[in-house]
Length: 198
Image (cartoon, rainbow, N blue to C red):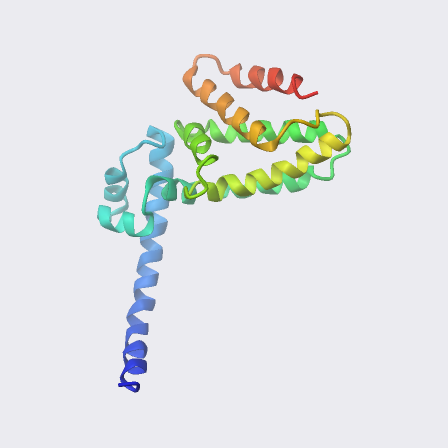
């Protein structure tokens, strides 16, 4: 019986490799279709339509992404990497408050790219079990470093938290989403918010 188990494991490995390659292709198609659907219809786009356009069944979508937030997390990884890279570039700025403001502005821009994203990010910030927390937690850490430098320079009040700032940026993006006829709204609200930080 002990000899039978390794044989079962070894005969199961080649098909699993093939399935992983197929699964990877399915996953890539799903993420690509989700990105297009979220851009066109918002993050509430039909998961069934996304699966159909990717050429797979809804069960395949759910095997890769057990819920909408997991799919959103996969779609937004490129933007997340870009925001994290920018935070590292800004970390050495000799103007720490301006660096923080620029980075928060980039988050508002990102959150406004997909209708519904700001709302989802706000809810994920309170639910660390959400797949979107995988986006929120690295952003929180990156932003905390920029905020700390701005506070140490005396440019930002010491009682301001990165959690508050991230919620405010998402709230600004959400307000801008609700007012598409006012493209300057996000910038105005961000400037008003930042005046209160000093």
